[in-house]
Every structure is written in C-alpha cells, then in structure tokens.
Image (cartoon, rainbow, N blue to C red; front, side):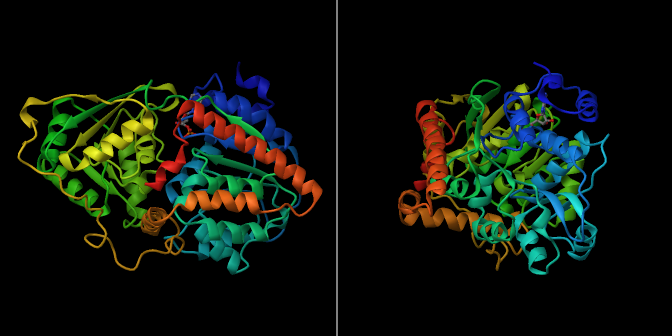
Length: 476
Ligand code: AMP
C-alpha cells in the first residue's frame, strides 16, 4: 500500500516523497484515513512506529480543506506533549510534511520567555504544539482562545500523566469546546489513561499496531555485568574499540549524567548531557550537535530523552538500569526505529540485579549476557541500595511539574508519583473510580459503554501479548 490511497493531498504526498518514504507504517495506514474523516482516535502506539506522521499528515490535510477566518488568539489544532523535546520534534515533523502548504504553527513550552509566545498566538495560529504547564500559564493570562479549536491531540499521554500534568490537562480541557476532534496517543494504558480517555474521547476509533516486539526483533540487546566503579572505563572501551559514532547513554540521575559527560570528555570522547536542569538553549544545542554527529555521546536521563527522535540511532547504552522496567523499553526504543536495526547495551552492576530481573520479567525474555574478561565483576563486592540522586546533585525546590514548563521539574514530580504508588494500590483505586462514575444521561451511557468495550479490548491485547502496556507493573 502506498501513501496515495490514504486521502492526502498532492502537497503532502510530495513532502512525503521528499522524505524518501514510500510505504505508510501500520499506524499511519490505520490512523490517517480516520483522522481525515474527523473521528476521535484512541491510539496504542509507541514512539518509533511512525505515529507522529500518523497524526500530523491527516491534520495538515484537514487544515487544507477549510479556511475559516481566524480571530485574535484563536487556534485550530492543539498538540499537547509531555516534554519540550517532543514538542519541538512534533513541530519539526509538521514543518517537514507541511512544507508545500500554507499554514501557521508555533511551539509553546516553558523555560523560555513567555512574551514572544503571547505575541505569536495573538495573531491567530493554525497549529499550536505545547507542553501543558506553559500553555496553562498563557491561558491564565487570556493569551489563547480555544473557541475555534477543531482538533486536540494528546501525544504520549501516559508520560504526561507520569509527569504530573493531569491537573493542568483537566483545567485546559474545561476551556475547550465540547465539539472537537480528539486524538489520544499512548504507549501504555493504565487505569489513569483509560479514565482520561473515557472523559475526553467520543466514540473513538481504536487504532493499534501489532506489538512490534520492539524489544526483541529489531534491537539486539546485551548485558555486560561489571562493577559499578568500572562502568565508565568499560563504556569508554566499548565506544573506542567498536568505533561507535553516535551513542545515547542513559543515567538514572541528572548528577550522574553530568559526571559521566565530564569523565567521557576527559577520556577524549566528545559528549554532552541532556536533562531537566539544563537550560532549554543547552538542551537544544546538545541535541543538535548530537544529531549532526559533532558529538559522539549524548548522556540523558529518562525524561529528557523522551521524544528524542534521531533517524537510525545505532547504539543505546543503559549506563544504569532504570528503576521502572517500562522505561527500559522506552530507552531502547530510541534505537531500531522504523524498522532499522539497533543495539542496546546494558552495564549492570551487582546493585542492579533485581532491576534486571524485573526488566526481563516485564519484557518476557532473557537478555543475552556477554562476559568481558577484563571486566569480570569482583565477587567480594556486596549489593548496596540504589541511590536515585534525590538531594545529591538535584536542584532543590523543584517539584511542580508545570512551573518549569516540562521536564525539568517533571523528573522530580514523576519520582513523587511513583513513590506514591509504592504506598498503596493507586491504580486499582482508580479502576474503582471508573466503575463508580455513573454516566449523566443515556447518550453518555452509550458512549461510556462503547468506550469501555474498546478499553477492554486493549486490556485483552495486553494480557495476550504480555506487552509493554502492562502498566500496573508500576505498583512495585
Ligand atoms: P515516530 O514514531 O513518529 O517517532 O517516528 C519514528 C521514525 O520513523 C521517525 O524518524 C520518522 O521519520 C520515521 N518514519 C515515519 N514514517 C515513516 C515511513 N512511512 N517510512 C519510513 N520511516 C518513517
């Protein structure tokens, strides 16, 4: 099947051709026609599946079909994303596919001045891509008017909830017209996401791509057991001996990312860190240098790495394993994108054996262990509790996910959410909430029942694939 049968106009087809894509990915095949039709969509899609084009292409198509007169502060399409990086990348995608079309778009996120953003929206903008915190600030100043909003997209909705944006999202929803198209993309379907989806979507079309076994097929995974104190040395050796040119390395903490970057630089390997305590300018610059192959290593924390989209990123290294198994899948999903092959290497010390066990249980497969003679772990070293960098190295005072406009404080807020779920079975409580909530009238009841059916279908899929979306693992 080619892109020509999906209902996209010539300008979009030309832009797609320029990108060298001739076949739509499964999510694109399913999503593009229904979004063009104006339907609500609930999409189970991870990054790497081509989901961004899956919604940007049909939205551009819809925009090209009508030309209403825009008034001050009005917008037609809003895309909400959890991080600034993802917002910038969605904007990039819109620019790429919309290059032969007339439209206006802008990106709104925190950490940069608000006034230029207010000035841009004042003129009326077709597409706004925003992180929820800054958008709410702008809305609070009456700097945006949602009355002409046609389509709302929630991209990586699971991450937005993880980062504590739910209240911001709810406040924003209250300002939006009831009659609108809503698209919700999420890699995982926790009870919180389901609750959000049932409140926002109207009789959505469920779009899902068969689980691509992101963790198994395209990405080769290995674990090297190594002592904590020798990880840096092993990483340098791997980079140098294998001549890796572009490596994304994950650390658990911002402090760890800074420290490792410095050490790599000292070892003659060009590196930059990207995390929530870095200024927006520094983050953009680091990412651009990495993409341009000017630096070999980008050291990132989980949140900052969300949405980093680099074509054919060949190597991902887990310098430290993530605390949550699901993050392992997100991390290694940075490589092997859109059918390319990739390599994910995890350096695992004795403290992390339990984390590795949880990850293998979660992905339902054992990761190959490759022994490197010169780095045989010292058997006398005992496991110690894992430090998550709270206090040491983290800036004080963070914690409100929206005041930093996104990931900066999101990292703290996310940890808090997880800590909360350690103390009780929050997910199950939410499930109860969904059940208890009675629809207001019979039409709503019907919509609710249909929605529930769709969500149940997702549950069944998750149960049968043991897939990544088994989000209740977070109960740990
Ligand atoms: P996404 O899942 O949106 O983050 O996209 C993952 C990657 O797939 C991006 O680098 C896109 O440029 C690429 N991509 C999107 N659609 C296609 C397609 N139809 N064929 C090949 N690559 C694609």
